[in-house]
Length: 294
Image 1 (cartoon, one colour):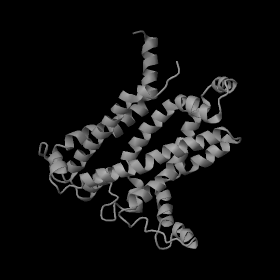
Image 2 (cartoon, helix red, strand yellow):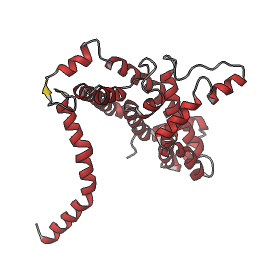
Image 3 (cartoon, one colour):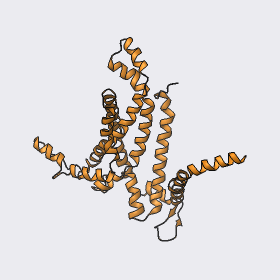
Image 4 (cartoon, helix red, strand yellow):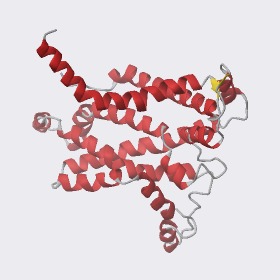
């Protein structure tokens, strides 16, 4: 290797060093530590004790673990949130793509996304308050008795999902809008010459051409759905009666309240396996509905 090549390589390593250090310290090391801890019993104070697969047996087969309930709540949150979020984001993107002042509307839609999640959660806690919240006040003015959004076990996950849909739809709208603007106009011109109407253009051109964006948004929203924590911690603290306890909240509960780091690490590994499996399955079948222009 010449001196010039060595110098260029050193400059390259220097530029990527911050990202590389961040990845090693905040991603790779915690992942490896979680894998190892999942086979130990550790309370953060005493010396870790090897317990083999006991932590996994506890969360799956003991009957005392909250893992099945947390998994059910997380799946409910994903089912409530992601389809509505994707549908609304695509609809808003199509509308914004056909109006003027795109930058202005894009900024307005994106504004909730850059707002702190804790602040957003506090505001929505007030909005959804069953006794004096503005939503129930508006419903009461229409003669409708509003429900207890955050204290009814049957409604709490739906209520948190409503907040998440409002919070995240602007981010995904911006991504869809970028995907729509990358579609060559020549396709629409050819369809117009052939006599296609707006609905035919949407289903025959827009949807297939925006399918890579849809695939990306679907994967990202699923990962974000499994990682839901902030809004639950602020709005309900996992209640009522653990009805809003998600997988990440359970990891927090085991690790930093019960000081059962082994259980927390085991739940983390199972959640990682679930997300990895779903992502791989999506990639496996993506060639059946995702169209890449060549």
